[in-house]
Length: 469
Image (cartoon, rainbow, N blue to C red; front, top):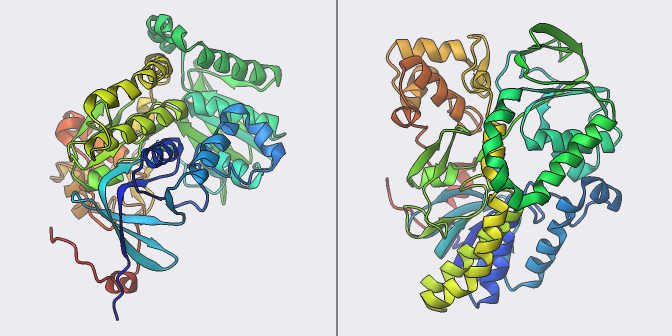
């Protein structure tokens, strides 16, 4: 027996991070009907995960940047927005139809406009041994800290690069974790390359001050630090036991219980890819991002993106981008005209420009290590779901796999539960390097619905029919 599990709203928002929360609050205040869908059980996204239930000690430890999320969540709760926590979106169509699963049932919602606010995901760091127990992403460790107030036991080594790497190291140290060493791939030449961006970055002096505080806290803790690190390899029998690497022209080996890897974050483009929106390659940070106008609208006119899902801009800039997207939605739905939209947006534009002033410096300083993008060791696993190695991919290219979608036929790479989220960037990079092609020529996986798992029972219980592809 089928059920009609459908509903509608002027604006449907996917994701409850800073962009999603502010967009919902703003749009609701303008008289639009709003429905926010999010996989988590509480608002906040990854950056403000657990903000409503965090123990005061944990909130203090995570600092004022994290605590700022409480005001956003409170304002959202006080708005007239509809909210569906625990909702896993598995299909989005250009006509405004969204399919999601919640509590074991599939539902349909139709929006006059869709805002994708799914944020960023950590870049995979495929090094030898990265699939060993005891190796995890630095962001994963931060999630444990935010959601449960726990840190890994024993000796911890943090390796990779990026401002988040340093922030997480600082937070772990403050939480009393035994951080045994910090291994940074960033080297002196990266600082020289970023120097030309410093004058502009001074407009966002508070970000520079935060960076100095992180460095100060890490130095004050006496943690051994290695820079210009390369050729990282984790090893161990049943679990991770040691990391070897090169730094300063020497080979080093350190023993530890946990290895935390991080090489920056990249936009989560699964939904915009599934919609076949236009995307562009960002060379400095080596990721794909959807092509957007200044209000976040994609090449699919009914769909907009706000926050790190459109380009990595940080939490505060994402919150502003959410409000701008809501203003444009209100204009499109006849709440006010272009002139009033622009007038309301003017002060937000000024604040956004200040927050974005730091990005050129960060993007240049923390460029991803080429060895993370194109693993040189053929034995390194790239697709964890199907256990496909870098060597397997290179062999498939030699045998005729010209792009990521053909590679699926040769290796099943990207066909596991994560649907290519973890391996997609690395696969494209390896194919491009093997063929001597550009990333634009090589392309990315074709993402098809359902983009998240659901049962046949959930699907069969829907009255609503989707257009065939």
